[in-house]
Length: 391
Image (cartoon, rainbow, N blue to C red; front, side):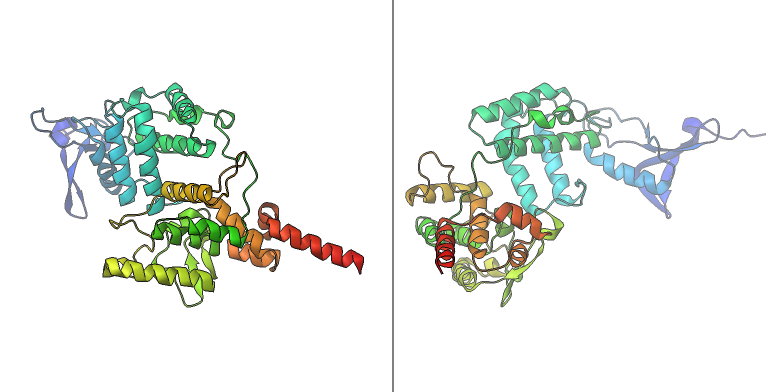
């Protein structure tokens, strides 16, 4: 009587729906259990890798998906190469973000988020930790030193927290790829992280002050971005995500970049419509592709996505030149334009209407955050009160 085969003698190619799954095999254990295996591709000059059991996999479909996940991270015939260096991990992570293979809890990463991730990783995280550092050797102490170094360089608390978030994302990817067992960033408590809050109250500019600021911006595209941030009450990430298809006759579609509720339509004010029309004319002269419906409205000269950091630099420089940044005050920044539009609007619209403009899910958020008035608004309020009490 022929004994049933098990072990290596029972190994067969893995098939799904009649098609062979590359790099996959199956075999039987002595107790008859069917297991699924993955054999990494052979690298030039190295021995042929041995099949490795896919633990926890019980169906051919799951085995195929697991093999597809493991293929990009195999090194030298082993799963989850513990010798991979930070630069290589970063490149893999960036590619996985763009393809949608690596996601966050709410889905795929947006182009704007990927661009910011790339900037912070290449400018701060990789130089700070060391591009050639072995990922498996990164400890919580290294991340604490990174925060200290960035703070010493004069980076704001918000920027330091952002860079730590980038490092944490990279290491989360490393955990998913079985390069390391746990994410060392999870050991850094909230109390250890620098505050992302401003050191002073937001700056509220009157419309004449905004016009002074814009007059000092030398780059026309940056000026259009800044004007759009004010007249549309937009976050900088929202302004840089605008596409020509978002511009209607009387409305502007804002793609939410912070919360689901921040996605919505706002009125296209005449001032904003004029800014976008003039900008469209300039872009059209650079190439018809610049004004296609799916094209980003705001692009650099070479046609690349604009940097939030560069917009902030433009605002700082223009604010200095316009005399809007006196000593002892925090410089006018990106979000101050959104604050300023809200404060100016609240002089003649209701809190609910302002909440709609700002795309807040609850008018109470608007009341709490944006109820301050501009200096001109305070003066006007005083005049109204004086007139009322004297009548």
